[in-house]
Length: 303
Image 1: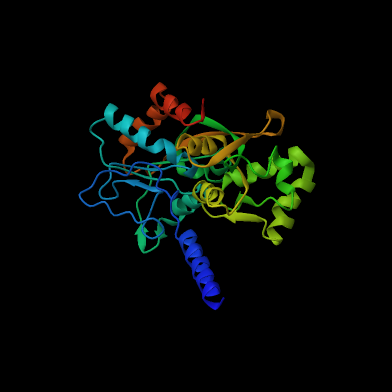
Image 2: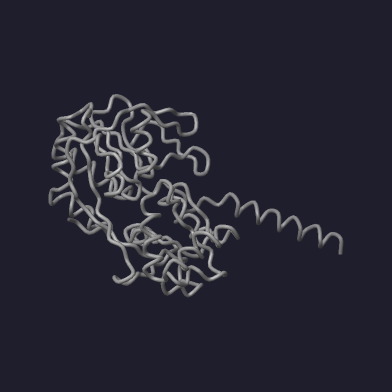
């Protein structure tokens, strides 16, 4: 009997270790650029929101993070149209973090400090309303709606935003402090179920830990859903659409138009852009048919 208990305990420990070290669905979900040494270690050395050439770039773009799935195609198409610009660096961190990086001049991730100045910043309208002094020109180029990402098969039978208030539903929610989508989702809660629904999800459930506030929603939320740490998450439609494109174990619950929020994506050309000519060309590219087709491919609506 003692041996049986010991074996059972060992198997339980081993199983928990395997689950703890499961990185089956970890990013990067994009295709990393080729290099003589490819050294991405899931869970340890993995920097999915920094793209391209950090050394002597000819163009630096700060994209609001939920556009990460478009970056490979966007940069490849731009380089094809403008072959003189091959060294491009892009970040897809949360827009509030990127705004702080612009204001402060640097960001540190792990042991790496980045002091590159952006030529272009993209985000939602509210972000631009708070920092108009930085931009010489702006363009609106895409839009998005909200959806609910759930586990494959929707085991909790989520039908809409009101179900996220249920005590048995673990919610993954972007932190409104630096993610514009967080504030948009809060508006949708009020539309769908008055202030009571917003308070239940964003105050009561945070207190009892059934709502989890992410730091990088476009990365953490899909992973939390896929690793069974959360049951449901309001996301941009394109985020759920992309995970389904990858055939990851998620499903999408669409939110009706009368409870939904539409958000526009705006690009701003920095007044002190270090690579002004390349930046102007990229601004024009963002509103071109080529770029619009790329955004539609990944579930965005083009303007």
